[in-house]
Length: 130
Image: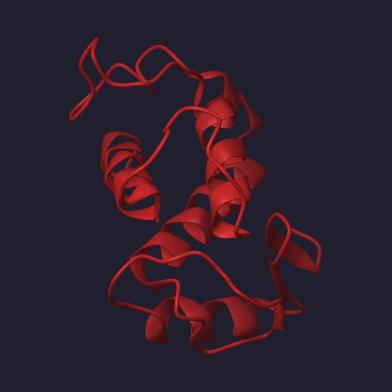
């Protein structure tokens, strides 16, 4: 893995080292929200669990690129879910946009970061991502 590691869209979180990622994942928790500013090496970001999960899934796809092509049909997925049948890469790309303060391509309204947190949580559990 090479640094910097960047997550987000319009607004981003940039990590310049493994230690910075570890500090973020150990300290950033709470309610899921989008970014309102760009940050470098934050220990917290206001993104809560959502931010942690986007970082975790990005790290796992960087370690195993084939994971991005897996189709989401698991744990919390059902055919009524707007994410059902999408690839993990498509879901993660949407999560980056939403994390960065943008609009989801699949969810029209409501607590979009919270909904994506649920889906990302399922993916992390399904694939035993760390």
